[in-house]
Image (cartoon, rainbow, N blue to C red; front, top):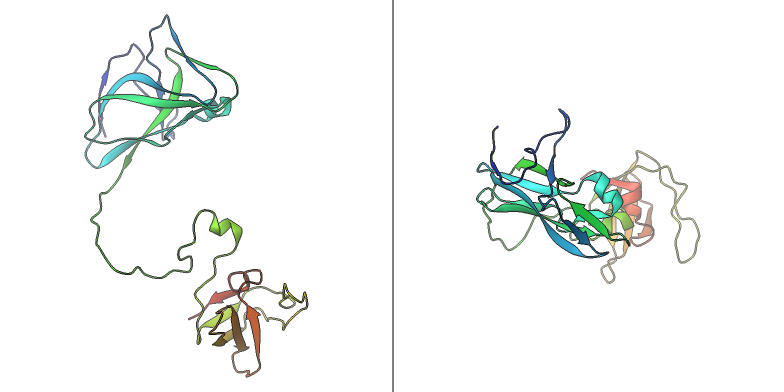
Length: 226
């Protein structure tokens, strides 16, 4: 695929460093007698002198270079976005995340460009969305605890962890043990607090309760069968 480009700098055209590289370097286009100083925590727009005609259905993302990031130079709005209908000069918003002044001179490789295919979508207004195990969990919720699947009466679970038993945070005492690979069925849920689930081994009428808040048991110890 060919991309039309106007180069008003005296830097060479962007190129890929290796055959497997996804990004090409973008260089600063500054008066050769001057430098741009970026103070700590300061942002500045750095011109490249490049103008692109990105094909329809594609976009260009502007992302940091790993070496520059290590020095404290990052793309402030990473990834920057260049749409296919933009015809202006590409400028890179650099931010100094270090505690020292950083100087940018002409020809410095300041960022990378990545040209990627995308698809526009049509939005459909609805009243409800399909349910998932994750639900509305966000902002690091999957790092804090295992995603809890939807549990209701009749849900069949299969034990996946060879634990000796459940331990209550309140009493710190073991409850009934699980058998890995054995199926269990939810036979009751506390309708007041919705936090106590009664399960029983399939084919066994002996049930025991598990607090849903105790160590995320359902996500850690069970997979939903149906």
